[in-house]
Amino acid sequence: MAKDMEQLYAERLKRYVTAMRNEKPDMIPIRPFVAEFTAKYAGYTCQEVTEDYNNAFVAARKCAADFDWDAAVSNMVYVWTGLTQAIGLKYYGVPGIDVPPDTGFQYLEPPEEAAFMKPNEYDQLIEDPTGFLFNVWLPRVSTDVTEAGRPTSYRSNLSFLKGGMAMLNYFNAFGTQNELLRRESGTVSAISGILKAPFDILADKLRGYLGLIPDLFERPDKVLAACEALMPHLLHVALSGADPEKNVPIGFWMHRGCVPFISQKHFDTLYWPTLKPVIEEIWAHGHQVLFYAEGSWDAHLKSFAELPDASIVYHVDRGNILDVHKAIGHKFCISGGIPNYLLAAGTPDEVRDCCKKVIDTAAGDGGYIMDASAIIQNDAKTENIKAMTEFTREYGQY
Amino acid sequence: MPQKSKTDKKPGVCIPWEEKRKEIPKISGDENLIRKIWQGNDALAYTYIWHCLLSF
Image (cartoon, rainbow over all chains, first blue to last red; front, side, top):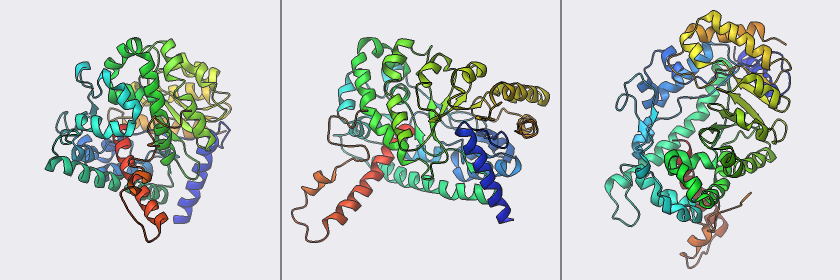
């Protein structure tokens, strides 16, 4: 049995990697990014998988064992609110506390005037990003961490101790989880490591989107310099979590750096020049990056096409998969394209029809991975996930 | 590709070994060993803060 699982794992890894290199595998790989769906399927609430990562791991493994998927994320729910509460992070809506127990966790962005970084603090960030995060940012995003220069407190000390030990526990647990996925169901862990664009980090966690937009007009040089100061750190973090075997890609989560959140001019002058060199450097180290293009990034396909062949896998959410395939399908593997609303509100027949259209559009020459458009939450119907999986297996043979 | 910020704190570093080394008047044993362990633990603190920012 163990040998069969190992053989299955090897076949799936080969299929997945072949497609990601934009080549033609034996069949279309299936790699759904299932998050809170795993909880629903395994009989947990969102609170149970978010508050206790062991439940999330069990749920992910149950799905991997029951569905014929080539690769899955070890825990796509990802945020362990036990850890965020140990640190005292303010920007989460926690299931069972801030939102109902069976609603997925939420990110909360403060109003512009309460942004975690003030408009006059760019120079501090640029001068020493790591110091800024410890001394200025963390005390603002944590209920417990004391501001630098003020007397420390019991709660502040505990935040670092509990947060540090909990993070270590959590990260170490992924090694065991990946091994269990391999042994129990022959499933490949789909991604390794994390990347975000410098611009998105400024918008998500520092200035806030509402704070950053006026900065683009009032202090664009500072925004650019801040992005440049973040680049080597984001590269370092991405490489430090990358797959040492160089099989699976680094996950790159794309948020609000596209038209219409920003103008084409700001994409061309700020977002892309401070991201492209990071991707090129990661590729020079032999790692692919999975562009998880949340929303629609169709306005920027020409820029993405500047990247070296096979350096990225491009995931389609709300973009037009035909346009994406035409613009970059000759260079990069494409994944996704099955709308989440269809998985939630459609019928299995409608899901099968959609899968056929997407496969006919994007998968003819290989270089395609089946997945939903966005992360699959607990609104998806089990019969629709089964339909997506089974149809792809039947129709997706090369 | 900018290699580092204006400070001498490179990616992966919170308190550079060179800064810590100045606090130790004399090392009679293996300085490389002390440096290596210092840098390894220091990198954990770096991992902590950057993953707070990026992952959580």
